[in-house]
Image (cartoon, rainbow, N blue to C red; front, side):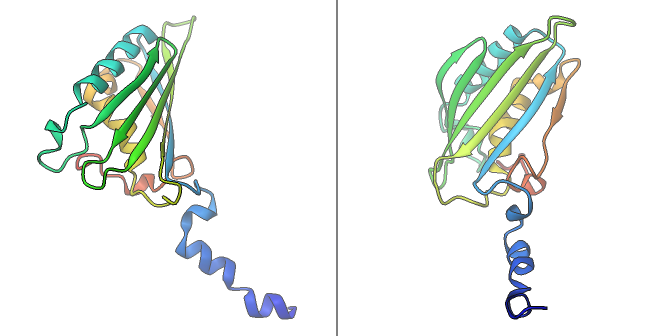
Length: 167
């Protein structure tokens, strides 16, 4: 073992233990989620836009939740852009939803992405995942036929720590 590897051989393993996102997850607080819905994209679009508009005020934040302070920035049947502001610290996360129709079976495929605007945000305890998931659940889209969701700790900062019932 060379001098460098002998002296510094533990540096990388210690960094990976301290910062697990380095081991294969995002290096910035963000989340990517893929969904399939067994309904047309126009229905998904209408439900998501409606839910974002329902949760624009701080009313749902009263009991400590995060199901509030969403802002719709732009929307068309293929792409939705929104923001979510955390009620306590006022951090802003940017959200996008890309909707694609399947002509074979009438299903809709959606790719969602949430990213913290704060450049130094690394750990978010699953907040960016919850930004997206709460809209899907709040709109009832998680109950439609053919629903599926796909993500992981690799795609979402601290996904396994997410507790969306409080966010």
